[in-house]
Image (cartoon, rainbow, N blue to C red; front, side, top):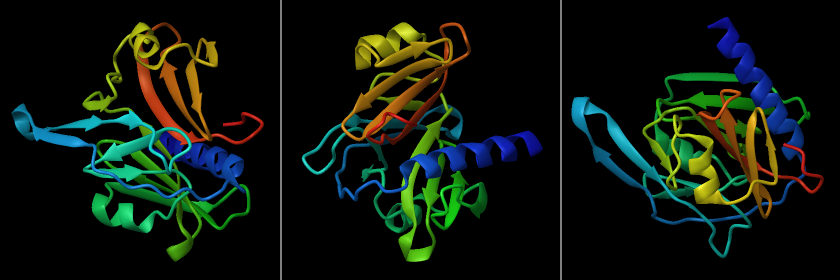
Length: 190
């Protein structure tokens, strides 16, 4: 538990610190599919796409486009009560950095109250379909869906589109263990 909190805090600090100063993009849509599968689990389908109001990747969930660096309140209302939540002062001095944990993903925000904005999403649930890529797939699946990465190393693959990125994290070999969506800043920092 302590290791998870430390990892979550570090992740929130990294995301919050590099995203300071990004511009606001608005976007909505109805692109996600959810269906019940055996054992009461829900299969979530996520579309990795780009719309006219989004300069890059977006994460679609429950019919809502989650666009980075936009107000978090409407999406948090839709997501409901998280299984866990952790807040601390943002490393970049932009108010609070908060991680909302849900069974499907971790949702990162920064700011406070009505100024809370979306920073990123971390997916480690293999039921989430990220445009044809799942946690547990081999790296070749991500390459066939997303194309050539801008960065590839033992830790995974990085894809950049506009002012957003997708990090496909591996186990150090060729199996995907996590997929992270977030904002990309001009110098390429994550």
